[in-house]
Length: 353
Image (cartoon, rainbow, N blue to C red; front, side, top):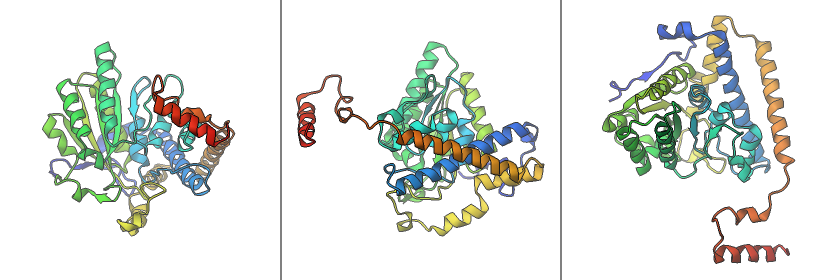
């Protein structure tokens, strides 16, 4: 199956374009935008880890190493489309228009962190594995029934393909020809379980065959391949061509979460090797240098601007008024049943309120 679903690549590890069909589309503006979004995501991710280690936010879920997959795919979407992320896809949500402050508030444990800016259709991050595939399929089906040309993209990891929701989502989307792109980031591990212990199939893309939809496999560290092939899938969905399953093969350098120790189940030397050989940002930098559109001064200024933007968002997050304790109790049911009211009163009593 790996020969039937080869990893599509446009930009190789040396920063060389290996698919001439896309050369004319790689204008300087697009390339610099992709790089800027990827660098912004990486710096934000590193800040998130640091904030957690300092006790300024709660458990954080890092994604460094997966920037090409997240930024390339989210850049392929348009205003009015839907995005359904997991807890690891803040690189994608920030690129699609989420606010830095609110994403940080999410990791601070604030309900406001689930709210995107007005008019931007980003679903709250899904912590239950694979549940968001059904939500994405339903939203796209609703758009189709309303007669719009809006599409959904939904993110999930390799472990999610072992869940029933994955199969139900793909089956429903296939039967009703729904405009949704199923975007899998295969980083090789579902927490501590490697892919070969999750499934016998050699690829995730081949799972599309069972639902008679298109399945494609990408080099998930090649932002050009991710951007252009996702864009094609989204355009096909808009035109009534139905769903696509995309497998982006990538690698996460760090832990599953800041509460995890990957050295217990994964050879961390692999991450060091991949930083030197397949890193998505380094690959794009090489291309830009070869094309003469790279200036160290530009990169330095860009990094400074992004750092200031992130620090401003951190200050905004930390200057928010403390949440009201009733928020834990008042947004579960339309009318609280007596056990919730009892808990609420008991907690207030303990706090002397």
